[in-house]
Length: 243
Image 1 (cartoon, helix red, strand yellow):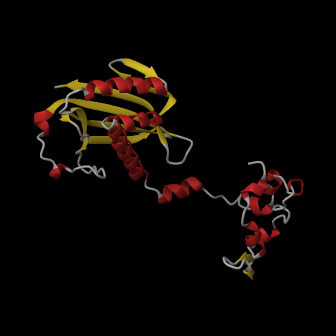
Image 2 (cartoon, helix red, strand yellow):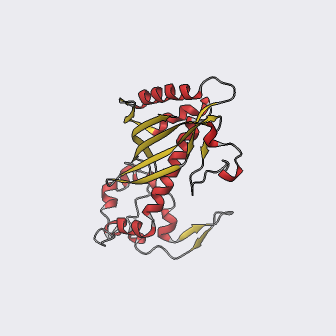
């Protein structure tokens, strides 16, 4: 943002130590912020020409004093975040979200597009397609074939295993395994896997081996997006084995 005034809202109170009361808007004194009180006093002027530029503000000693402090942000994050647990959460979140959309309603299916980028790729039966809309159309064809038109339900996924791991410095590999069954509800039955609002193995009365019609194995290469904690599918490989 080029206009420094737009990003500074309550700094006058912080700098001067005068804070507004919530009801009668009278000022009460509090100790001014040490360091900020030396900040250019004209940075909140209503006249753009009277305010210092962003470059001038960023070069102020109050801002630059930590440049040489030797703060290792990566080391700090690594010390408070368990990378293994983070990978597990991302992998399980992807699996549940992806297959809920795949086996869900036609209305929610359109949201599948948001999981891909323009340069994403999808491979199935030796064919590779690239680009968000092309992948969506290909998945829609596979989904419609599995869904069928029978009143008793089509063919749905049962997630039994999820394997995950780092792929280089930025990407995550997620592999999902399980059977296809005849039914109308996607299931997560892997040991240690949980999905909010979905039945557990103990709550099910269906005989999965009896209604199994095949197996699937799917690999996803996840790539971080621009937004924090946002991942996209950069590559996807689907394998289906019929019973």
